[in-house]
Amino acid sequence: MKNFQSRLQDLKSTIPESVKIVAVSKTKPVEDIQEAYETGQRIFGENKVQEMLNKFLKLPVDIDWHLIGHLQSNKVKQVVSMVGMIHSVDSLKLLNKIQTESQKINRVVPCLIQVHIAMEDSKFGFAPEEVEELFQHLQMEDYPNVRFCGLMGMASFVDDDQQVTNEFRLLKNLFDKLRAEYMADNPDFQEISMGMTGDYKLAVSQGSTMIRVGTLLFGSRS
Ligand SMILES: *Cc1c(COP(=O)(O)O)cnc(C)c1O
Image: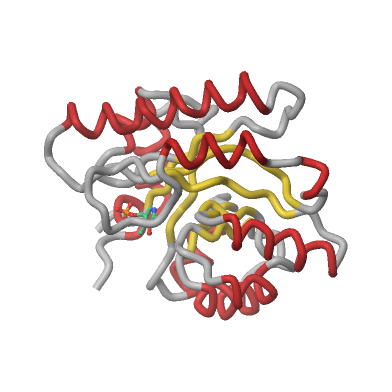
């Protein structure tokens, strides 16, 4: 079986160097993450707060922990001191809570607004129309402890490449529009987190700046 390093090299050879790789380590033991760390990987993605916190305590301090799963408002307090980026800001309530808790500890937390781009209706995130409305009404000065870094989305889990491509394109177009209309003065607003093991090539072709890849790097999850 191939190790993390060769899988990472293979992945890197298929995408531009500028695309950031979030190694999604959910369900994987700390030993696997340590091995990946030793190859130079620093960004790891987790989808559960408790699991991320447990791993954070056991692994090197310079790991950049990205929370990629749904975050409940009552757990924000636990993550704001250690998280490197929250990809899954999916409600105004959550955004407000991140502001409040980050301010208490005097930190600015990098965040992505999650947009629901898939046909399936089970996923979290703002609808594209809602996210436009959010940005219209957002007063940036009310969020001094939130760094608005961009958008995140997940495409439908389907074999239809055209559909997946269209969904990623929707997110890219929305990002461009929001940046032009509301974020022209904000140089931090530059990330489009889209693409996973099954669809990262399509995502990169549509302008992804950050892919979240688990299975391809760590092997399948049990
Ligand atoms: C699990 C997960 C991934 C990675 O999935 P793979 O198919 O294993 O690459 C990416 N993004 C989110 C939000 C996830 O929960």
